Length: 531
Ligand SMILES: Cc1cc2nc3c(=O)[nH]c(=O)nc-3n(C[C@H](O)[C@H](O)[C@H](O)COP(=O)(O)OP(=O)(O)OC[C@H]3O[C@@H](n4cnc5c(N)ncnc54)[C@H](O)[C@@H]3O)c2cc1C
Image (cartoon, rainbow, N blue to C red):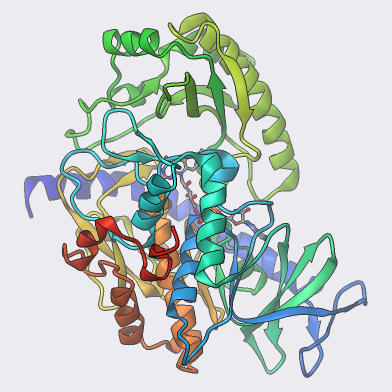
């Protein structure tokens, strides 16, 4: 083992121990409570499962049916839907439907305003999965939805408003069907086999209805479908879970003044450790980072004094020529449970107040920001951490940091760990493979992709990143579609067929730089001609 490898193994070892054990106990307990709750309120299906009697004893109509249903339209959901739709052929059509509770697709990109699918691309980061994630960046660029880079490195910044339209375009042109303003509320299990999912219950302005689905991909971020279906999951307590953030944008920045200030007072990743404990491998420390902290000193100490669970400081992303500073990731809340509606309400209200305070502080302390105006507050709180399923395989931090290889790989992700006190930037070209098994929960015919896929804390700090979510989304979408086509249970899907289809979709499943990298000019053949 090289010095570098032993260093990162030691680093991970320091953080994966006790906390994870405590977390496990809480998670098991929660799971039991959730399952008991589920038992009391569990839906009852009639024998042919066409109509379901709910706890209110109302007959619920079947409003739709499809072959592959994607729940949630974030980076994972969009990728899953596109991948499943692209698996469909004339000879063997697959009907794909994606539903989303809000009025737009994009998840954290559009509803929180996070513009970097891969902010980790410092020099030396050489391998990506190349699949739909990269395509989203390329299409955005082509459609005028990405004209900036993350400050100090080569990562594309998406225009998050524009991305709403880009996601609509990609999804509708792929042939998959779309349903917005529709929340998943319950899982419908096979009356013959309570472990097998056969559809979902949804609620929207039209009422409550059932969507029958042969395969479901849970891309809700919170593993809502898996939890409702009774699959096991883990979840950290309020204290240990990553914090929530209210993101905002401002206009009126005098760019030159601000850049001069940044030049005079440059920040690096060492600065991140001023307010929270952060371990790096050392090579990250001197890299430039778009980070602000000292600017909020007064505000932070007043909050600390009042013991308010809010703190200020973090990254800005890119500045436009029009004086916009977008993706301001500066207002953080700790100790709230994102699966508790009352906590979410308190956090939203405290976060928005925090944004007003942050704007006032920026005006006062940051050169070039003296005349800014608040342009927008994210339409919803940014959530990093809630349920993670217990999968057929649970990815570990050591897998991420040991260039792990798996027979059932569905794609790769660079060695990038960001969270739970660890920051490793992928400047060495190292990467790991992602196994399909970490998308397979206890429930059959269900796949889970995105930030809620199976793994420990440290691996979550890698897999939660949007580019990784697109890898699991694409893998899950293809696996769902192939298992439907092959008439195999989701749990028994033929991995070779899944991998063959992923390769056909130009995914770099083993990380070699092959056809995928040459794909730069293009996008998936189905949409290439239309944009
Ligand atoms: C403040 C913040 C900053 C971040 N910064 C970065 C960054 O710079 N780069 C990066 O790569 N990652 C970043 N992340 C992490 C990353 O954005 C998320 O982990 C990632 O978006 C998760 O993708 P996902 O598709 O799994 O879930 P999400 O993006 O959360 O999408 C889930 C979708 O499912 C929908 N949904 C949820 N429940 C239901 C339901 N019951 N019914 C119907 N629809 C439902 C949601 O509305 C949402 O659209 C950040 C996260 C936060 C919160």
